[in-house]
Length: 110
Image (tube, rainbow, N blue to C red; front, side, top):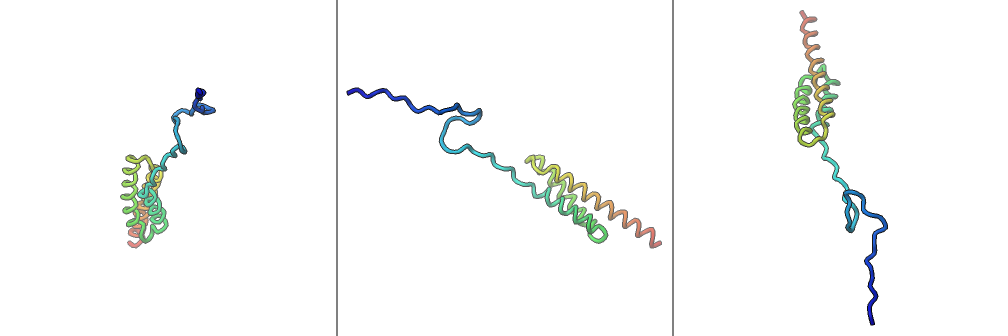
């Protein structure tokens, strides 16, 4: 008795470009890791502007350094560049406010 020739089951549609045949679910791209230096720079910038009469200069200097580190990390990873630039801008603003207050207090006290 002869066994009838069977064909392998075919897929109803060809695979999409980049998928290929296979089993299981297609792999999802991994999300980029967050740039914590950029986030810290923005937070320190807001706090430095908020407390510019008391701690703004110190927080501004620290936040400026963290923002520059965030820019360096964003150049390597591609994540957090805009937040780093915003943090650098906020911390620079806090430093300028603190310098203006020191100058104002120095001229008024004379």
